[in-house]
Length: 402
Image 1 (cartoon, one colour):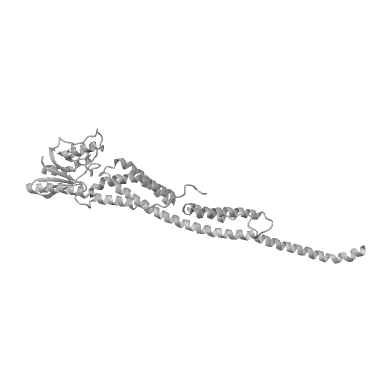
Image 2 (tube, one colour):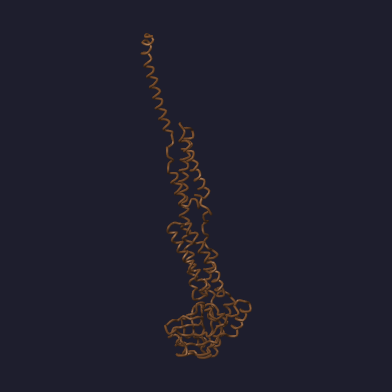
C-alpha cells in the first residue's frame, strides 16, 4: 500500500494541477465570451426616448400606421429582451435582438426627422390659412355701417376670438389645436359671408346699375333743360353732389345709417331709400334737432308697392311699418353725425346745401353708377376667399394610440 501510495501519488499531482488549471482557464474564457455576447441587464432607454420624441412631434397624427408599427416593435423587442435576460447562456437570438435594436434606432431617427419636417410644414400652412381668414374678417368688418350685419356681429367677434386662440396655439407649435380652432372659426364665418354677399350682389348686377344710371341721367337732363338745381346722392362713395344746368356745382361727404347701402324696405332697418324724390319741406333752426334739414317725399308710390308686396309674400311681418321722415340733415347738438336711414352732413356743409336747395328741388339717391365700385370689389374678394379657401391639413384620428 505504501509503495502504491508513495509510488503513484507524487506522479499524479502535476496532472491534477494541470487539469484544474485548464478547467479554470476554460471557465474564465467561457465567462468572458458569454459576457461579451450578453445583452445589457436594462433595456436601453434610447428607443423609448425616440418613441416619445416622435410622438410629441406628431408622428401619431401625421404617420399613424408607421408610428403604430414602430411603437409596437419596441414593445415586442422589450419583451424578447427580457426573455433573453433569464437565460443562462446566450443564444443566436442575442445577435438578432441587437440587430433589431439598431434597425429600430434608425427607424426612430427617421420617423422623428420626418415628423419634425411635417410639423414645420403644417405650422407654416396653418399660419397662411390664419392670415387669410383674418383678411376675410377685415373685409366683412368694412361692411359695418354700410350693410345690415347686426345679427352677425356676434359671429364676427366669436370668429376673431377663435383666430386669436389659433394664433396663440401656433406660437406654441400646437398645430393640431390650431387646426381645430381654425375649423371652428371658418364655420362661424359661413353665415356671415353668405348674408353679406347676398346684400352686396345688386351693386354688380347689370339691371340694377342700369336703373340707377337711368335715374341720374333723367335727373341731370331735367337740370340741363331747366337750368335748375338738383341733388344726387351716391351711397357707395358717400357723396352728395349739387348740380346746376346739368353740371356739378358742389360735392359733400355724407354719413348714412348702419345699413345705408341697402335700399330701405321697412321702418328701423337703417337703410337709406333709393329712387327719385323731391324736397317737401325745409326745416331751419328750431324746427329740427339736426341743425337744419330737408325733408324728402318718402315713401313714394313705388316704395309703398314694394312694401305691400313684401308683406304679401311673407318677407315682412304684418306688424311692420314702412317708415318715414327721411331727411338730408346736419349734425345733432352734440356734434354727432350718425343717422338711422337719413343722409347726414356736417353743419357747415348742410348750410351750403340748405341755401342752394328749395322746396321741390329734385333729389335722386342711387347706390353707384359704375360696375367696378368698391362694393363689387369687396364682394369679389369675399367670394374668391370662399371658393379658394385654403384646405386645412387632415386632422388626427378620433383616438389616441399612446
